[in-house]
Image (cartoon, rainbow, N blue to C red; front, top):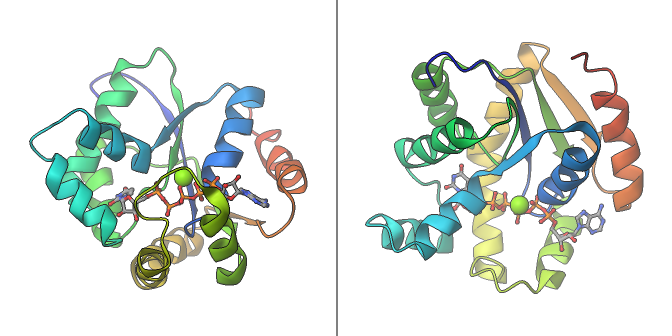
Length: 190
Ligand code: UP5
Ligand code: MG
């Protein structure tokens, strides 16, 4: 990223915990730019990139795409943006993602927003979403939950041990969750 000085908040939580929904609210109220790693990867598939087929297969299986691919997309998006405040949604998903991002970008997150939600509630939301996502079927959803528990929760634990995690009860209605989110972002000084 060169000289560009940026503020990054990682937004983590299980599949369907409401990361994208709440990021849209945060953008509106607090002037961040939302970078969903999953959305960037899906755009990469659509663009017909040489990695497209590999990414598509990984997403269909609920697996984590190689770090260098995702990091390149995130870096490019941050460079191309006029903004210097970013919500990075759905990344890092494993310890290797986390270490590689720190190594390559030298960016340390301001904090980690963690949406805590039961699998039962997340499953219900994903099966009702109806936006044609290839990974919103019960087989892939189960795989996503497994990967989240095994690989992504340790990342949350890593940051928690550094006192960087702000945990939100994400099982509540959307507006109630956002009240709690607002409480956290209101404390952020410019
Ligand atoms: N909804 C939201 N909040 C609600 C609430 N409080 N009450 C009731 N309903 C609520 O929400 C999901 C649905 O629930 C929506 O219909 C919403 O209206 C409703 P959303 O805000 O979309 O939840 P989100 O947490 O964003 O769910 P998403 O499915 O996007 O999470 P995932 O983490 O599974 O998906 P992502 O796009 O991040 O990643 C997809 C795949 O890409 C991964 O499985 C992986 O294969 C790959 N990937 C990588 O390999 N590397 C990466 O770095 C990122 C992704
Ligand atoms: Mg999302």
